[in-house]
Image (cartoon, rainbow, N blue to C red):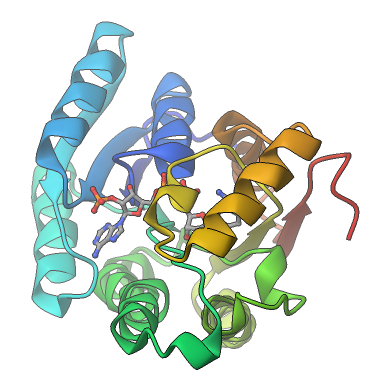
Length: 248
Ligand SMILES: NC(=O)c1ccc[n+]([C@@H]2O[C@H](COP(=O)([O-])OP(=O)(O)OC[C@H]3O[C@@H](n4cnc5c(N)ncnc54)[C@H](OP(=O)(O)O)[C@@H]3O)[C@@H](O)[C@H]2O)c1
């Protein structure tokens, strides 16, 4: 399928996987709305995309705030007249043992990883339904398929994203011609591990990084392009992508 000229909203575009997806989409001629909280990072990415001949706009967004998501979608639609792709990528993973009772971190994960996906989906859906076309990518994880100790709450949020993706696809793909893809990466190089406050798990992630070659954000972006370019009759429901050395 031709994606040149389509319009995308990418949440969590200020770093890691989201920034890589935004770059790849822009290189394919997609107009990209860059959504995240760190405006300086988004501006730098927009400059990079523009210098490479692509088109992007900065949409300072907090996905935990429903109105902020609505504003981002509205600005993009007002400027470019449509919305074809939503990448629900924003997320965080501050690992800890449940017994440490880091309840603020739990809440943050629920707010960003789950409510953020719902908020941005609600903001994008009316336009996609009116167009009778669209493609929504929800960033789950290997941690949405399997539970690991120290990741209890994170796994719960990513399982929720996978469950929502299935229900969303069942409801809107046949009725509104909107494809839904749940993306489930294994370990990817990014800033994700920088937010871990429990020393034991920081060390564990460092050891994991030393034991194998992690995926790059570009690898995930390539799988998203594959799903996007698939013929309209085909919905890639899941993308489960692991480092070769990770197994599971
Ligand atoms: N790295 C991995 O191994 C891995 C594996 C499986 C799944 N994932 C998932 O992939 C996604 C991207 O993570 P990453 O690895 O690329 O980590 P990252 O580099 O830390 O990126 C996380 C992104 O989420 C954004 N974000 C956080 N809170 C936000 C909020 N309230 N509103 C808007 N944006 C927010 C951050 O931007 P701001 O701080 O600027 O807002 C940042 O752009 C996450 O959903 C993560 O769970 C990652």
